Amino acid sequence: MNSDLIQKMQNQFDELVHAHPDEGSLDFWFARDLQTPLGYARWENFQTAISRAIGLLTLPSR
Image 1 (cartoon, rainbow, N blue to C red):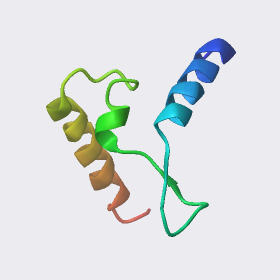
Image 2: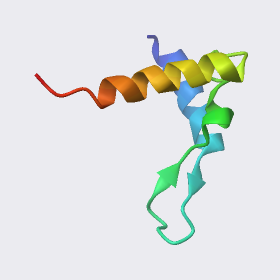
Image 3: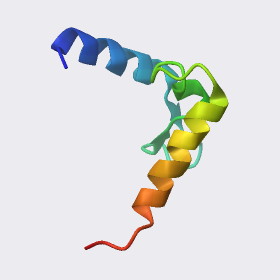
Image 4: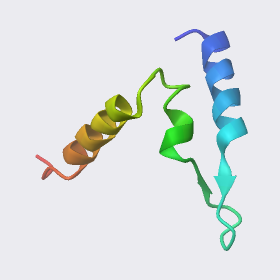
């Protein structure tokens, strides 16, 4: 990835970040806010990708 694209994406994510009200240093993003910057036009497609990622994270490590 080139540095211009990385900087553009970082700026997009920085604009979408939220801070937890009780934990000032805990940042989070809403999935629906991230779907467009990550290239998903439809929520259903993004939700499928999220489900796959969660499934991979719950597999036992080798």
